[in-house]
Length: 154
Image (cartoon, rainbow, N blue to C red; front, side, top):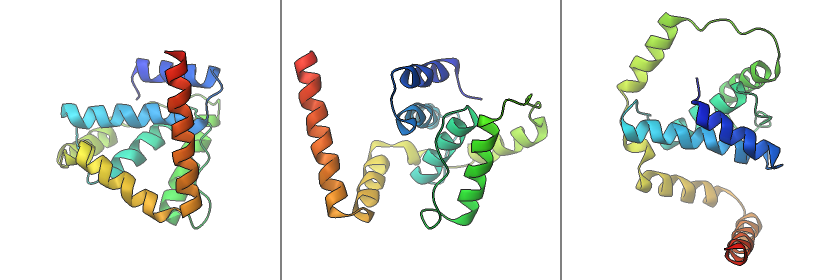
């Protein structure tokens, strides 16, 4: 279950008209904080991000599951399930205590390096490499525009 502040920050992003991926970013940030504080670990940075995105979908963020070919079929099926669960208004069942303990126990045995600055940087670079040149340039331009905009506001 996500923390209250995370849900509130994500809702505020939604009210401000920010994209679903920005809203989901709040959940990923929370997950990274949990790992850094030692609440649990993750096998890799990719897994830590996936946990955050899953929480976001289940909390009702309109983050669509990845398209065919973008992620493994298992990931897509789970993302679809999470998305449906978050969008449905049906009464939620109490989560299984036994399963929750098992998941928590497994995560506690994982390493804590997944949320380090070095790991996040390495992951960001590898993901950027998989994107095309034009896409990377567009991101850089957008970042520069955002920086300019923020400097004017300050």
